[in-house]
Image (cartoon, rainbow, N blue to C red; front, side, top):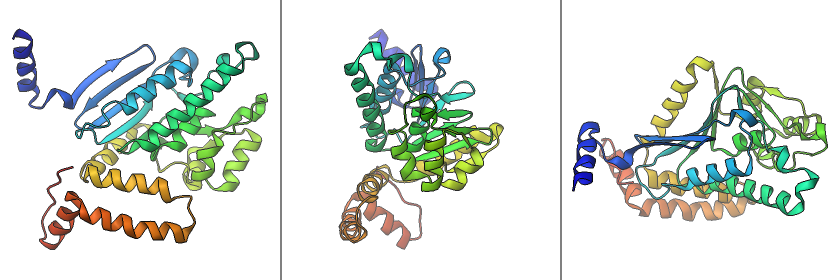
Length: 281
């Protein structure tokens, strides 16, 4: 009873359900979930926020947790320090650890990328520094990437004998082919401006404005119906690499399906009635 009363008091103080706000932290990540926005921050300073096995397991868990909670509207991936992520932890990829661990690392990396694709809400990368190798892959796989003007992006694996084949997968689908190939073949970094012009990132702004720009984008997403955004995101990834005629064939059916769900009906009705929509999500 005392525990229930404490929960009641906390909810009364903050005037919102407990599920709308929480913070948690491990030794390599921290999470803050408030007002529909879940911010996952990488903070493994010792390994330059490397995508170690432990880090990738953490990220998959945090991205997939709350996915069925309708209060979750957007996920932000950020990092402490001047390095967003230096990529895989090469200490976990030495010849001595064996092929089975190598396979585990890249299987888990794919699982991490799938968790972003399959997330029912948009996932935004917030970058204020260097994103290299699998760290660049993580940025490229996010639905939206917002970075500071001091940020840099690279796929340097070719420099030390490990071609960035998996980072090249989302890179080739986001950036211009000539930019992707230059990055992959030379290992050289590109600037934030180059990343923006090539399509790798969505928005570039000064470091001091980064939090504000990410927040603005999150708030724009929160104005929309969660169910409509989820439906649209799933179809986007389904059709993006299809033959264009097949995509149109399926797209028409998708639009009809969208019109049949509650928020699809509400959106059209509110437009006709010239009022703001009341989403059920």
